[in-house]
Length: 226
Ligand code: 5RP
Image (cartoon, rainbow, N blue to C red; front, side, top):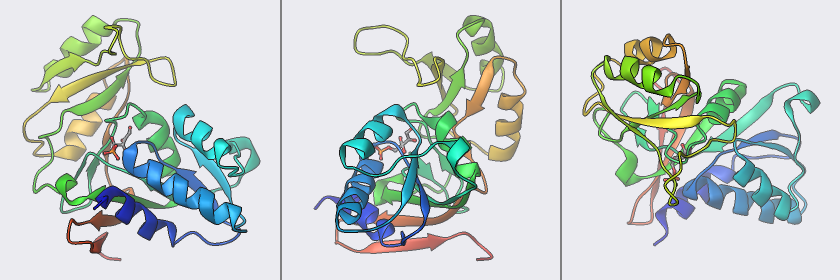
């Protein structure tokens, strides 16, 4: 059973004619883009904006009409994956290195719909190393300040042993906290460090989370007070 595909395809049912849709990044978002492409080729009228060059290329291959921020007012729905989801629907994202564009697009969207398989649900965030986008200049110094917040860091590398480069020309520092007791405080402190562009904690952004299970069911988790 392809559980990621299951959650992704259920979420794509939310997309209606006339919407502007944010396209996520990663192996789960891949299935959402594929389904959306199928619906567009069957007559669905939408515009889309992508959170990465990779998703943009896939969408264009599937003939999904792509726009940029200068073409649109707001984004109606963004569908994106996550690396961890806690009971308050706070997320860790950035496993694919696209967290900055993902956060910009999620923030500009009326609704962020998250698609995951059951393995992404956690009681407490932090088991997955938190990705942080850092500018190349001063990396070693920026990294030290990040570690002072109580984590171990690794600079993300490619298979060729170069520093991984984001679509924005920056690097990713993966930070192992073990447990993140206070995501809001950590997020604020991280973003105050010069050189940190953005971190992978998504707080009060997710509207709904579609969770796929091996049994074939898809649960929908709602933001509290919705
Ligand atoms: C990319 C992301 C992805 O959404 C996240 O890593 C989940 O990926 P996948 O769907 O492949 O498990 O944040 O930056």
